[in-house]
Structures are given as C-alpha cells and as structure tokens.
Length: 158
Image 1 (cartoon, helix red, strand yellow):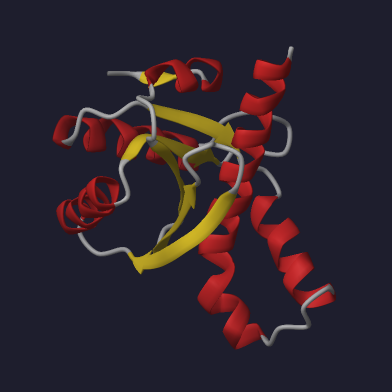
Image 2: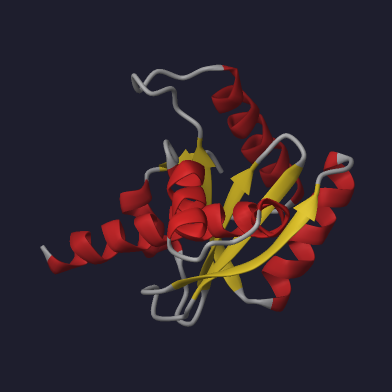
C-alpha cells in the first residue's frame, strides 16, 4: 500500500480503530495515539531508535495492543514547502514499514511542530531542559496527530 492522502484515511479504518502518530527523529521516535472517536490525540511514548527491524517490531506490538488502524507520520518539509533529505527518509521508513505490516500510512506537514511544543513547554509549563528532552518527541507526535485529527473533523463537518 502506498502513502495515502489524509482525506482518505478515515475510510480505511474499521469501527473502533485508532490512529497512531509518529514523529520520526534521527535518534528517537515520538509516538501518540488517538481515541476511538478520532477527536483527541494523547502522547504514548518515545522510543530510542536502534535498528529498523527492532523499531518496527516494537511499533507493530503497539499497533496490535492499541488496535491501531492507520499511521500518521510527520513529514518534515522545508519552510518553503519543498522536500529535503529528511522527507525521503520518512518515505523510506513508510515503505519499509509497509513491507512488514500492511497498514495505511498518511503523512502530515510537521513544520514547526517541535518548536511549537518546545515553546509551550518553556513558556506555559516552565519545564527544565532535561525534562523537555524526555517528552518533546512524544508531544510533537501528539501535536502532529492532533492537527491531522482536526483536519479530518473539519473534512467530515463540510
């Protein structure tokens, strides 16, 4: 299955399935999970990246455990909207993951997601740098997934 448009995502889900959001960093993967109503995203965990096979197996376990029907990957576009090397890395991850597990994958523009979350943690929560480092990736995944959920809700409301 190829990467699908976010507008097609809901049609791929069975009743009661959730969405999982991933923020793919070079060292970590932030993971977020939606509720079954597809309205609220919540942080799940951050995993340290190791080898693709090990990371994929962990994600597959989470997908099965949480009854996830599709993934939303943050697409790290450049500020001008163009794609750089990190976008290709995200596409490669999606392709490789789909060879292991047939699950719909959509991408969402993640520009400024990490900086928005970091700003919130500094300004609103006054969190220390060390603690921010522990939670920023799963919160960025939550931010990405929540934006995608809001877009789906807007699409349904039209």
